[in-house]
Length: 290
Image (cartoon, rainbow, N blue to C red; front, side, top):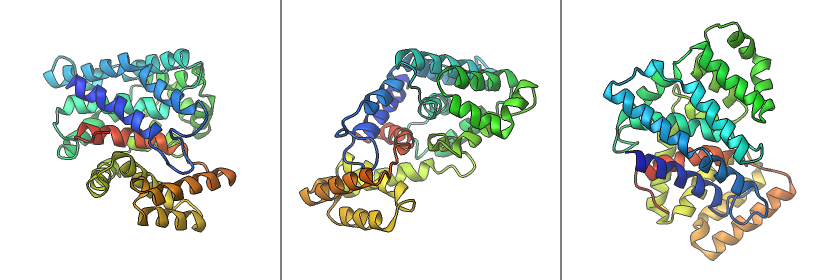
């Protein structure tokens, strides 16, 4: 179980970042270092992903109680390591869901995420209900000290930092819900709407349609950004889908043109890579391959 969860997490971020061409987002053809840094965020915390998986196994065996796990300390250690490894460029909205889903997948012991999504949800619900102020404070403090002052200030503006400092009851679910209002990667931890199974199913269905992993990922990404984009972008999206995305020369050309135009207009959706990374990881867990 440990190997498949870890491989899925790594493959998920790799495919999310490098699949080309995702118009207006990070991909292999972009000439900057952001792609490498995002992948390195995951690589730098492999030891802690393994620790998270082991937590799940121990809980499942009854060796420890789920409510007793030191999730805040685990997250804090991972973010500090990423901060050191990546020269201060840390993506908690990527790393934290990877850690929490690693615990949940291991704890629920499912062979397929889609078939066992209900069990995974129950595991997530139990993890995210943790409200020990010491664990919450660990996460808040590490955001402040690991280069994500913006996230800390966002929490501060909502009053959560004050509540945590006086020991009031704030759950992990509430903490991440506040962060998800600005960083979409945290929306993967929303167990009320719990859209992740829907996204994973869409990804698998797109693969059956296109018989191509890259185009499947691009199709899902275009679903995410379509309603947020101006009409001229939507027209390009429709044309790219008509020509089957990266599976044809015409589709690839349209995506390339759209990417260039969106960048000129400063229409950027880089944050969706963090959402894609988790969705693709779960797709890989269910059998999706490059």
